[in-house]
Amino acid sequence: MAYYTSCGAAGEVTGSCHLLEIGKIKILIDCGMFQGKEEKLNFDEFPFDPKQINYLIVTHAHLDHIGRIPLLVKKGFKGKIISTRATYELAVLMLKNAGGILEQKKEVLYTSKDVEPALKLFGTFIEADEKLKLTDDIKVLFKNAGHILGAVSVKIKFTDKGEKKSVIFSGDIGQDQRIITAPIQSWNKANYVFVESTYGASEHCDISLSIESFKEQILKTLQQGGTVVIPSFALERTQEILFLLKQLSCNGDLHNIPVYLDAPLAINVTKTFLNHPTLFSYQVQKEILNGENPFDFKELVETYSKESSMQINSTKGAKIIIAGSGMCEGGRVGYHLQRYLSEKRNLILFVGYQVSGTLGRKIANNDKKIKIAGNEVQINAKVSHVDGLSAHADQNNILQWINSIKDLYCIYLIHGDQPQLDTLKSQVKNKLKKKVHIVKIGEQIYL
Ligand SMILES: [Zn+2]
Image (cartoon, rainbow, N blue to C red; front, top):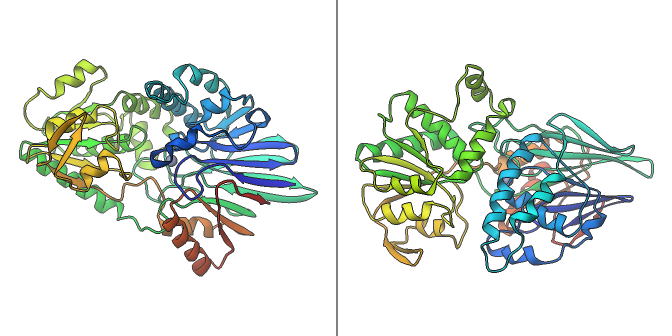
C-alpha cells in the first residue's frame, strides 16, 4: 500500500513537507518552514512521528523547503537526508544563518546548536539524471528543476503488490529561460505528480525586457548622481544581479562607480556557487571555462564586516548597494533605506516578490511615509519593481512541464495560494484534459 499525506504547502506557498509511505518505508519530501502569515504553524507538532521516518529527500535549499529540518532532527529523526551536493552546501549556509536569526526571537523554534546535528544527516548525494536505490522496490531519480542552483524535482518509482507505480514531486520549478541556472528538465512518464502552483494564475513578463529595464533604470539613476538600493535575496537572486551588473561593467557603463555587496550570507552563497560550474547555464559555464568569475567585476566591493558596511553611507556620489533581506525584513538593507529613501535622485529597485505585510511591500506599494526601526521616513526616492526575474514557473511553463509527463492518473496541486490553485486547476482541466485535485493540509491520498 502507498499513501501520500500533506504536511505543509497545501493552499499556501510555504512549509513544504510531504509524507510518502510505501509499505513500511516512510519518506519525507522536504521539511520547510512556514513563513509570513503562517509562521505560527512552525510551532505545531509534526503530524507524524519523526523517529519513524526513514528518509528525507530535499528538493532545494530555500528555507520554505529546508527550514524545519533542525526541528525534525531535534524531535528524533535519525534517517538519511538525500539531496544534490549543491543543495547540501547551500543548506549549510542557509540553516546556520536561520539558527542565528531564530535564537534572537521571543519564541525560539530552534537555535544554532540544533543545526549541526541536522547537517550531519546529509551526505547521501545524487545529481540530476542519477538514480538511487532505497530498497529493492523503491528508487529515487532527480532532474534539474531550473529554479535555483542544485534544485531538483524528484521521481520515486516503487512496486506495490506487484504493480509498478511512480510519483513525481516537482519541488519548485523555474521558468524555461533563467539567467544563470541550467535549464529545467522534464519527465516523460509517471502515474502521479504533485506540482507547485505559486504562479498558477500568472504570466511573467518577458525576461529579456525585464533585464533591459533593470539595466536602464540603474544607469539613469547613476547618471543623475543617485544611489541605487537593491533589496535582494541571498540565494540565486543576488548572483543573478551580480551577473547582470558584470555585463554593465564589461561594457564600460559603470564608469568605476562602486557596487557594494553588503550581505554576508550572499557573499558566502556566491562563493559556494563557484564550486558547481556544471550546474549553470551554457553562457555562464563558458565564462567559467575561460577562467572568468561570472559574479566578480572591478567595481564590486564586498562589505563583510559591520564596520565596512556602516562606512558605505558616508561615501559620497553615485553607487549601487545590494543588501538583504529581499523583503526588507531584517538584514542590513534597513539602514540603507533610512539613509537613501528620502532623496529624490535615488532609486529603490525591487527584484523579487514582496509578501503582503512586509516592509518591502509597503515601500513597493508607494506608501509615502514608513517606519523603519521606530523612525519615520519620508519616501521621495523613486521606487520601482522589475518583474520577470522570478525563479518560479508561470502558468504556461507549469502546463508545459506537466504536459510532457505521460501515463498520469492524476495531477495534485500544492504550494500555491487559493486563487492561483483554482485558476491552474481549471486550466489543467480545460487545456490538458486531465484529472486534477487541489491538495488540502492533512489530506491523505492513496496512490
Ligand atoms: Zn524555492
